[in-house]
Length: 424
Ligand code: HEM
Image (tube, rainbow, N blue to C red):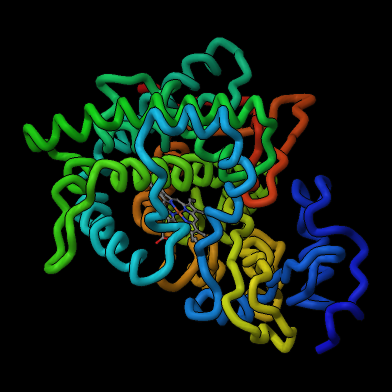
C-alpha cells in the first residue's frame, strides 16, 4: 500500500459537499486508499471494511476516550463552566469510556436494554407509529404535503425513548427533542459560543428534570427502562449513581434519536427512488427486516466516530502514531465493494446486508441496536400497510444537515395516498 502522503484525493473528506453526498468520494477511496491520512491533519481516515473491523476490535490500540479532547477547549469557558456547575458532573460512561470503566457501565446498561424490554415496548412503538401515520394521512386526505422528517421520523424515536425514561407524562416531545439537540450539538463541535452557553443551560435543565424522575423511581419502582437503570445490579459492580444515570440518559437521547430519524427518512427516500424494490417488498413482506438492514447499510447515519491512537501501530499497512486521531468511517466501510458487490445499489434482498457496520462492532457496538431495528421494522410495516403511494412533493429540494459525524435529511416533503384497506 502507498504511504499516505503519496495518495492524492480529488476532494477533502470533510468538505461540506462531500459530507452531504459522500458516495463518489467513498468510491474513490475504495479504489485508491481505504486507509489514508487527511491532508493537513494528523487524522487517519479508515474507510475499508476489513480495516475498520480490525480497528474496532483493537481497544488496546484505539481509545474511545475522545470526549475530553473534543470538549476540552470549551470546558475552559468560565460562563459555560459556571452554568454546568449548577448541575451534576459529566461522567464518561459508554461511548467515550474505555475498559474497565466502560465494562461496568455496559454490563449495567445491557440489563436495561434487553430483548425482553424491546419486546415489551413493541406495542407502544406500534401505537405511536399508527397515530403518527394516521395524522399524516388525515392531512394528505386534505391534499396537503407532509414533511416526513418533522411529522414522523423525528417524533417516533423521540416519543419512544421519552416514554421509556418516564418523560411522556411530565414533558412534551418538543422539550425532549430540544434537550436531545443540545447534547448532540455539544458533541458535534460545530457550534458558536452562544449556542454552547445555551446548550449548557439545556443540559442543566434536563439534569434537574431527570433527578426528579430518578428519585421517583427510587421511592416507587415503575416498569420502564429508567427504572431498570436505577435498579440495575451485576455481581460485584456498584449500582449507578445519579450523575452516571444522567450521563447515560443523555447518551441514549443523542445516540438514539437523530440516528433512527435519519434512517427512517433516508429509508423512505430509498423506496421512493427505487420503485422496483418497493414493489418487491410489497409483494413479499418477509423482506422487511432485510430491507431495514439494507437501509442501515446505505444510510449509515452515524457516518463516523473518533478513536484516539494509544500507541504507534499500523492500520491496513499505514503507520499511525500514538496521540493522533483516527476517523472510523462506518458509512464508507458499508460501501466497500470488496464486501458489498455493486455497493451503491439498494437491494432489499442483499444476502449479506446484515453484516453492515452501521451500529459499529465490538465492545462499543450500539447498545440501542435492537430497539432501533424494532422501531424501523414496525414503522415500515405500518407505512407499507397504510400508505398506497409515496412520492416526493413537486419541487421538493433535498438537503442534508452539515455534520462531520452524523448524516441525515433536514426535511422530506412527500405526497401520500392512503391505502384503501386502512381507510375501511
Ligand atoms: C439507526 C440507529 C442507530 C445507529 C446507526 C447507531 C449507531 C451507533 C454506533 C455506530 C455506535 C458505536 C460507537 C463506537 O464504536 O464508538 C453506537 C453506540 C451507541 N449507541 Fe447507537 N445507533 C443507533 C440507535 C441507537 C439507539 C436507539 C440508542 C438508544 C436509545 C443508541 C445508543 C447508543 C449508545 C449508548 C452507544 C454507546 C455504546 C457503547 O459505547 O458501549 N443508539 N451507536
